[in-house]
View 1 (spheres, rainbow, N blue to C red):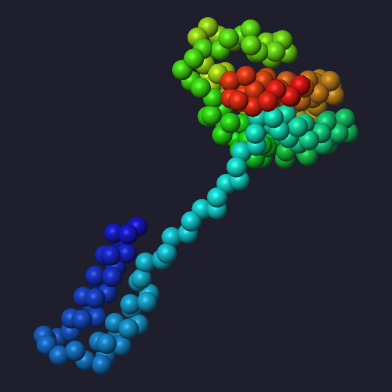
View 2 (cartoon, helix red, strand yellow; view 1 turned 90 degrees about the horizontal axis):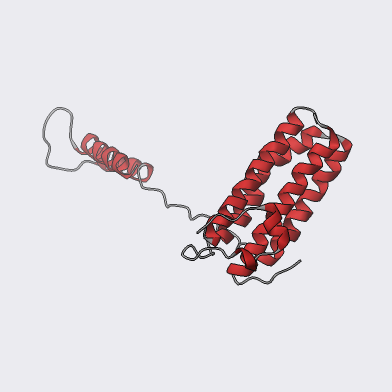
Length: 196
């Protein structure tokens, strides 16, 4: 982008300063006016800084955040409001999951393996811990699981609730279970407080 701007400025200077018919060593009023008009048009623009992102939620507040965000979705599932569910799932993966879970999982250690004995029984019901899996890898797997559950909820809504209300509630319960397991991993390995 900068190279194009420089080339355009050089082109304007060549056109403005070089006379058409013959070489004239004197600068005329016409060439000064042309330069004065062209100069502001080809000045580089100041770059705009990105707005700073808000700090991520702590692990302790994540479960409440997801519960509050999913509460209206439960009502939509019960009412059969499939359009609202589709709109919610479209934006919530970015707004809800990526902006809350991804910054937190990056704070977890990746060198040490997870000790399943330190995690709660509820977490172990939600996810099986692989041998030599780090807390960071486990948290990423749980975060990705939330994405797949949102996709499942969206597919359920696009199929006009095939499988009934219980199927929609199952997807929401699975999301909340994975978020609770994510919070548990963060509480054990990330320094957050356990909030059950």
